[in-house]
Image (tube, rainbow, N blue to C red; front, side, top):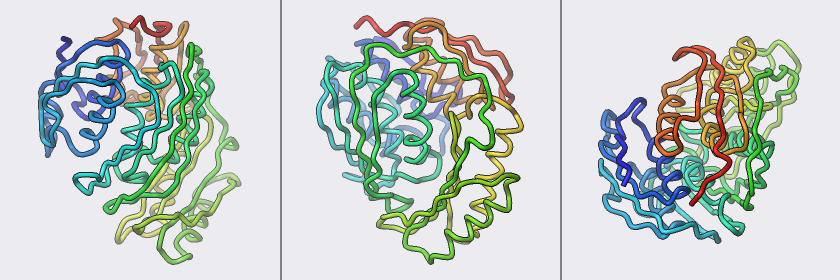
Length: 344
């Protein structure tokens, strides 16, 4: 049984997600200790627990320690069993935990199954501290398609904090091999487009977000406007292009103009750095590059502790696969020697 320290490095939920995915893919039993030990609320939170139990269902795994607040977990997978699954973060706790983080745990496993799968995941789709569903749909999945993956995502209903109640449907087809990538060239400003959306708020909110975006950026930008189907109230701004996306959420007392400016400044900063991917995609794509064929390279706007921790987890399962040029907090180039899949 492989034992991992859940407090290592960034010490957050990414260690849980990546280690569980790789345990399922390699067939290794694992034990996670000191899970999220340095957090204000240590241990498993609702979205982590949903991911753990969802992957246990998909892999028929034996579990111990799968409770809210648990800081120690064992996971012993028995295989990968594709099919149609529904998972709800709020089923027991009423949480608006992120559906996207649950999808991140399941997706790398099910694409190496021997048949297609459909996942319905309910909870928070646009919530703080996690990628919004639009990021998965417009940035992450298109990036994976370049690597040979056949998958699509549909946002059925938006779920804002604190009510949640959102729903996504993810369709996955098996892949034989993931292609190597070279994403070191920066995208152009004109490659980007925008979205201004709100749910159960006055119409002027989306208009003000759009106007603020147009005033904040130095080039004409195609901006879509959307009324979001949702149980709760919320607003959202999203700017995206090849291998990069930047978003901001509204909040009580936060002007619509501030929401737009937050996303616009993140995009402008990314463009000045002239790197190939945003730091979020660098973190998320690392596992797929390590599982791919050949040598992959991508340049990131920032080397984050999240990325370095994720690399540490992957290397524990697959051996040393990564070379990182750059320092924590700065830009960098990541080179990955692919393992050409797995011998389960």
